[in-house]
Amino acid sequence: MGSIGTSVKGRVELSFLIDALVIKQERVGPGLYFMELQAPEIARKAVPGQFVHMQVSRELEPLLRRPFSIYNADQDKGRLELLYQVVGKGTEILSKAAPGQNLSVLGPLGRGFVLPEKGQKVMVVGGGIGIAPLVFLLKELAAGGISAEVYLGARTKTCLPSLSQVGSMGFQPKVASDDGTIGYHGQITALLERDMADTAIAFLKPDMAYACGPKPMLKSLARLLLAKHIPFQVSLEEHMGCGVGACLSCACKIKANNQEGYLYRHVCVNGPVFPGEEVVWDEA
Amino acid sequence: MKPELSVNIGGIKMKNPVTTASGTFGYGPEYAPYIDLNRLGAIVVKGTTLKSRQGNPTPRIVETPSGMLNAIGLQNPGVDYFIERALPFLSNFDLPVIVNISGDTVEDYGLLAGKLDSASGVAGLEVNISCPNVKKGGLQFGSDPESAAEVVRVIKSSTGLPVIVKLSPNVTSITDLAVSVAEAGADALSLINTILGMAIDIKARRPVLGNIMGGLSGPAVRPVAVRCVWQVYKAVKLPIIGMGGIVSAEDAIEFILAGASAVAVGTANFVNPRATVEILEGIEEYCRKYGCRDIQELVGAAHRQ
Image (cartoon, rainbow over all chains, first blue to last red; front, side, top):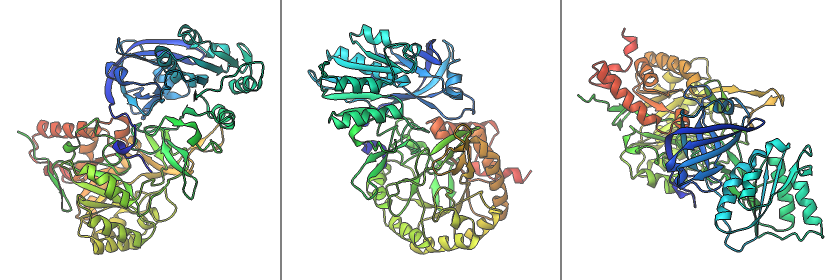
């Protein structure tokens, strides 16, 4: 148990603490921002599913760093791309950062997605801002010649700024919105459930599903996938202090053969990506 | 000329006065990618208990003005795991390893001290009698001078290692506790542990932390911590490791002037993984700037003005 750094299997050890130059900052939807950072060391090492821990201000308030999943890493240009949502004071301050400003960035951190093998059938399901790490994943899948069934959902049409990018990679995402302004009117998991049950649609049982989104979405998704015995990997979120496994705040319950039936693992070093079958979903 | 920065904390020889606050630095590997651990005066590792502990439910932290509340609940893999799996990593470095120990009972403290006494590579013990986040033990020992002294006596009879007692500010008189553990044989003191606090989510209308209450740390607590060091320095003649909201060399100097012989960097590690080393460099710089040849000249200097 616990997360003694170097003994954690599969942990990516190489991470950097750098001052990264903001190249671009753009509002791309309601409370949604796209940011590009010059961070060659981090961009070179990052794999889909990993995150960066950023200091949004040099002041003592807010004090802690904020974690952001990596939306894309352009290794040639040495740039990192983030897609984030303003949810509180920290992200509000970050959204005001202008090109030319330096931000302290720690990363790449955590364990990313385990990529499929060539020829495997893949499904990718994202909801809301949880789509962010999946775009990097889709880019890698496209580069590896792997096709994927993609399901993306959001509150409303304007909260889906990644759609055209995903389309330009050669994927044809199925879309749902809570208000019906685009695609299926309802939750993305409801659309997926309908497709899975519809005998007219040749639903290909994937060899692996990848998902990121709000907890209730992941929980519904887990129910669907577990019933069909489809293996899946999920990227989880928790309140995070340090990002490197020292503070032990970002705990999540992972099934274990002990008295309690679970162990706490940590999103920052044991995740953020976990095998969906191992997560304790009842309390999620 | 390079100032003399070495200090002796109750028998633990540190090459400089900068160490880490327990629970904010893991067991070392977490921050080894960002700093050379050899530069630290010592490392104080994550709180260790006799058996492994799962810790508290989430959320375990919440950010507050210039600080944070935590209620981790002493999650740790237990002392045997620590000795077998974590300690060997630290033996690669030239720095004293101080193990923070916490027990549910007085006997636990004795057993922990005994096990660590026979482990190689442990320079000293920091006794946590002040954790606000656990139901049993913790603060219940740290708020009563007689119980605190009893814990120290049991530990002293189980080990020859230097014993540093970490005191809580969540008491009426921290000096009463300091005097009591000093008389019981403590070799040094750590001041302070976190301050008991809580936060309420006004939308959900319920406490934020899974454990309801938690320990406040970060720059917000610094004035309280400096006051505690000041009071205790006057009351007992033991070396003090000062901590509580240190994020810069200036903060560290403030603690030293109040009476701390060494300082521990805590929450600042989360924000800046290089905080310890930058603070050390800043202390050196301060000594040069003010013509201080030995850090000892500064310890408690504010009392002498």
